[in-house]
Length: 249
Image (tube, rainbow, N blue to C red; front, side, top):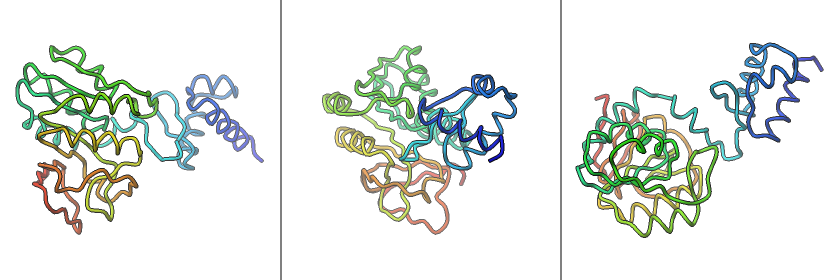
């Protein structure tokens, strides 16, 4: 086995044990340049072992969930346009639920356009954005997911069930072959279903790539939403029972 292959195998072991690593620490550990480590991480990412992040990498989990740090940087222009449409469904004084999807995270930056909101979320990154606004913020308790930067579990659901919402913004991981949005995380399915039952208006927000992706935990049918906002629905995919707004048409 060549030196590079041995080093990458050791990096794999380190990532599996520690779940994350920084380029600088790996370079010191193996006495190579940061550029060499970045190449190693790129190869391991192709192998499906990890996700690269700014300055390092995190383990790729069994459920293939992409870390929030990466998701926030993907298709940013599409998410911005979707958010510009979504904010039209928020009125002053609303109780607004925003989930932990990366598209919903982008929407959070626009909430300053409204007054006297009560914002409910389980997204840690979104919390950091809206904490500096004048809005009231309710952060759901529960078990913290480091990878998704969100809270989850029965504590979060208990809080969800104690409130009602004027509008809820929810994303999806995929819907290939099924008649509604789904997630790759079972707990996210439960949270989404509880929120939708207590919301007056439900808005599904997603970029076009999710329509062709597989996700196992379906949490609703499209017809249960008031509106679907996306950049576009790919050709050959039929979505029934919901108003569709396509930002690129």
